[in-house]
Length: 426
Image 1: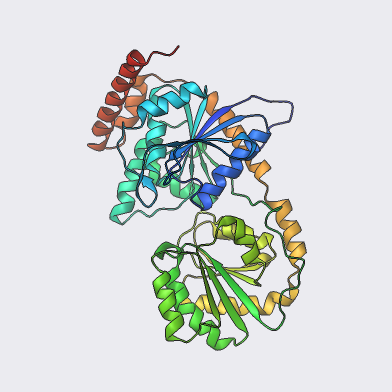
Image 2: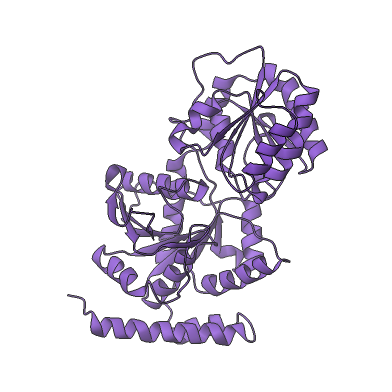
């Protein structure tokens, strides 16, 4: 873990956060970038965000505390990712770096094409870069093999990397070939001022289980289809609230119709992040059925609202909460159903406000920001390398891939030289 510096040491950073995933889209990566940026601004650093356009949201926008966001005119291509062009964003990216006098570029999420391209261009221009990985990926399927090779290419020349859990660090090191000494573990956090228990007493004549998640395969939506009817059959007082949208929502709707559970399973659809707390406080238990998860901020939000969590034992989830605040189970229906039964028995021992206070002590975005600044400091004092030294790193990425990566970076360097000649810095 990264230890924060003493308060006497201060160096102002001018950071450009880059990712395809940012507001108005909602998710763990989006929240992480926003809250981290807000804390860094409060500490006196300058933060600018660059992402692709969302609908009519294009150009420069300002958010709370003067957070400047560049929505570049690049449309999402697949799953909120912009179309990979390698060189297409270089001119506008270079303009933003110069205009904002950026000193360090921080990219987020391995699945973001905008992040990968920005880190490559930043290194070509001599900027120090930091990368944060928010997800876990496999090694066997075709998509993971392709993504791991792209990640190896991008991270071959990063200065420092951050992962949100120790499991995520191990996964990233194995996929990218990064030295473990370059990878730091800084967990996510939760805004406990926003997520707090309701002063109103929850109903005692029923037990409400809340699910808030994207309804996709990776988040275990198919597992929910098997769990919910059986839980409703075994526990007559249990009711479900399901928030979220996605391609698997149809299966949940069909399950509800098939088992006549319309009165016991409430489908909310997509829930704006500002309304998540009002949904959570209606429940007693939070259910997370993810099949893979690097950390899961939703668990922190639920615990901060005083809910006992039942979750699959996958990825970095066992690292998130103390054992008395979470019941873990294998990602199979029978084990999950047993875990829900165990959680129901534990409910009388749960004090919602005590849990909220503990979360306030355990997780803080200010602490995350302080630790991230330490990583920035280490990145800025890392050695400068010339083009030939950088090419030697790319060359080691594979017999054929290494040569291709070297060619890509040579062309990137030539394009940068042309831009320097064509658009002279005043």
